[in-house]
Structure formats: C-alpha cells, structure tokens
Length: 258
Image (cartoon, rainbow, N blue to C red; front, top):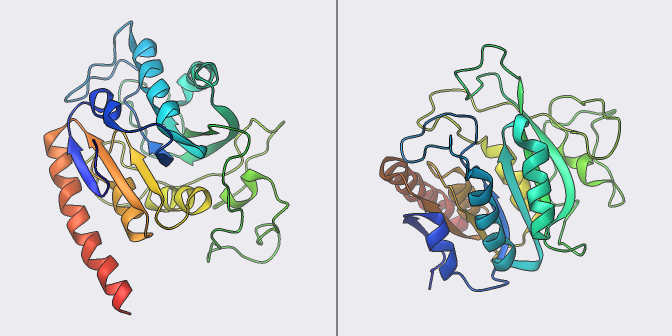
C-alpha cells in the first residue's frame, strides 16, 4: 500500500500498482518525451514508448476518482498521438494549456518551438472543477478580468496574453517558465501546478505525480493543504525533492500558526 505525504524513489509503473482504485483526485505529471533524448534513467528512443505510455495511463485511469482530473505535460510534436492514447484509455477531453518555453528542452532541434503543452483531461464528464478556485492577482481590468462561474475551462488559465484559437481544442493560455537555475531540465513552473491543483481539488484530496522530478508538484500540493504522493526513479532528483519538501513543511507550519 502506498502512503500519502511521501515521495518514493522507484519505477512509477511498479509503484502505481499499489494504489487502490478511485483513490486519487488529481494527477499532474511530466513524463519523459519520445524525442530521442537520453535521460539519466530513461532512453525514450524506443519503439515501445507509446505502449509504455498507454500502460501507465491505464493505471492512472484506474486510480483516479470518478470526478478526478489528470494533467500531462507533453512535447508539442507528441500532442495528437498522446491525446489519442488518453482518449483510448477512457479519459474525457477537457482542454489544452500552453506553456511558453523560452529555453526548449530538446537540444537537438535547431528550429526550436516556443511552447509545450499540458493536456487536461478527466476520468468522467462529471469531474470536479472549481472555476472560482483561484483569483490571479496579476490580472488587470479589461480582457483579463475574472469571469463568473459560467466561463469556459480555459478562461481562468490565461496568464500573460491570449493565443488566438480556431476552436475549443486549441491552446488558450500561455505560461512563462520559472527564471533562475534549474536542477531538472524540464522543471515545471510553480504557478501552473498551483492553478491546476486549486481548480480541480479541495483540501485533503490526494494529488499524484508519477514523474516527480525535483518535486514541484509535491511541494505545491503540500503548501495548498492537499495530500501528495510522488514517484521518481532518479535518486539525485528524488534527493532534491525531499529537501524541497522539508522546506515546504516548514512554510506550511508557519502559515498554519499565522
């Protein structure tokens, strides 16, 4: 049995099998990409990449609550294939979120794209979504003002500027990557993780990251008063995640005292 509020070092496909069905409210994760880039612990230049992806996505579907949501970061080249696999598994399409990426993670491509995508889906059509879950303090009067509860999923994701969209499946928001040094080459922006958690969970719900990296998802989950579970196969990343969690525990306790 996998306990909550713990980060595990190991293969996510093995670890996830120890989580009960309908147990997780939200999954937010950034899996290795199938772009021919060799990571420390995973060479994704293999013909079975899509089969492997389908296997862990099936496990995600099994453990998600009926009203649960899943967010998966993917390289834009993989968007259609990966989305189709998620739909095949049974997930319901919700939205696509754009992450503006000024330092593209793929060093082998000289024609670098400026963005990556977050695929947002749910287990059922009745997923929990608190559309008023978070007010962005950086919004200004005018186009970016807060919308009421009848707004679309994408309305609250807009952050920097709007992306013109031809239909509902196209991206509707842009996020800047965190500035500063990155221990992990694909480190997630904290604001993006925070919004996903606030909109799709309530305090006490469980959030899982299958590829936890240095722990952005788990630390934000902890700070927001949710329960977390993190899987990471790389020992170095896992160590950094543990250190970040210790720091977030102190911050969470300070907020509680205040």
